[in-house]
Length: 354
Image 1 (cartoon, rainbow, N blue to C red):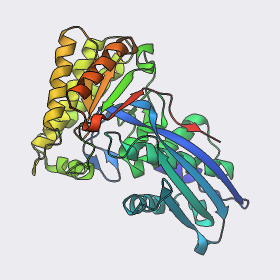
Image 2 (spheres, one colour):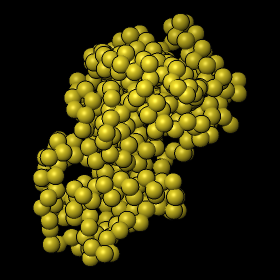
Image 3 (spheres, one colour):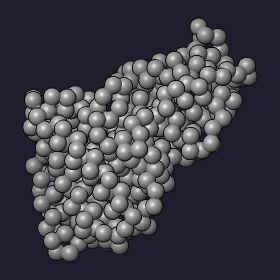
């Protein structure tokens, strides 16, 4: 894929001129987590996610032709320079310039905004790097640098997004995507999905809106010497295959079991690493207990977690009335940080907005 990618962007154009585009890309919630990686930003295990709908990043890009010395990227987040974001974006951008050589002839101005709050239990790096990758791919297409069919174009966008954030590889696809099952360089759309999952609900319950005590980057690194590393990777790969099959049918009982076991296993890896760390909070455990009691009483809700304390409450739309009642009860019991939660569902992937 790397060789094909370099060939695809090697041709130059003499008519870059100027222009703009606007892209939005959603975040995603991993059902099987990517936890542990190999150089360069390749997954140690396969992962699978549902693409969200409302929780997205919108990237507005303006470009103009310039000399090599003038080529640069000016990036702002919600209209402001943010050093922590800028450093990551600039590093990613410089790595792309070695392949997307036309970037050495353009001056870029990019502003990024989110439809959801930062540190809200949603992978903002997934949506932002996917939107940025799609924006640059669209620029390359507009100025005639690449000419690819849609499937190949998305694979390349996924591959570039991956270099900025592993989970971003999956955010370029609608509904559901896997990464590391078909190829490690890029994610792939999951095919043959049952209608029940195409608008599956995700109520994101904010237990703690603060910054995580341990970064995901460190968590990935600690997997390198983890005593259960090989077993973890084997289990994750197996679950991806099982969930791809489950997404073809309406079987909430087996779906909920696999998703919850996977989420808890991820956190068990954190608790048994060296050094160990615990990202769940007491209120996280209280909500998990309530979810399990509700399901024991016949209600179709289940939970998953990313690498943090916040709960993603998953449910089919036929169970929405109870899911909303459950959220209200969590708020009343003071289990949510300032009552915060986000009402989202599975969606149809990125869109070009101009």
